[in-house]
Amino acid sequence: MFFNNIEGFISGGFPVLKDLLTREQWTILVRDFFITHTCSSPYFLKISEEFLDYLPNSTLDFLPEFSYQLAHWEWMELHADVYQTTESNQAPNQLSLNHQVLSMIESAWCQAYEFPVHTVSADNLPEQKATYLMIYRNHELDVGFNELNPLSALLFESLRNNTQQSTENILKDIAQKINIDESTVINGGQQIITQWFELGILIELN
Image (cartoon, rainbow, N blue to C red; front, side, top):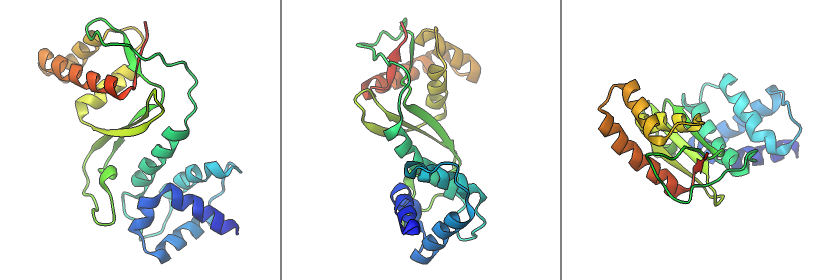
């Protein structure tokens, strides 16, 4: 009964990883977790997180090399869905890209992976490729994700850490940091920020 309950939670949390394995391999994996991993929390909702802690230390040789990164991406969807915000996030009513001080909603994250884990399926095993993925739960409580390029990933982190800079100054700093024409970065960055505004994942700081 205990094993079946845990297997059910893990199957529900990591369906893509499960589809990559045979039924026998999946059972071996879950049993190894059940037997060898010492959980730090007694709560069933934490089982997926405990499995994620276990996976990098697994010695099972049939696991794909991207197993942990795939599992982490699958877990992020659950994490975004149940995340409890600790701050009041004020969405901007409109954009004034030159002067507004903007940041990212608390329930948005940018993750870097060595594989395009968002494309993985039993029929599509990935080759190694640096991939940036943003997952979010927006002001309307909808969960979604976007693939980012290196520029938009850098912009995400700059906005995430922003407290007082205008959007224009952030983009100018990025252009200087990566040594790309300032107008190119500003034009591209403003388009990205407009998309994020439409997704409902920006907040206005003042």
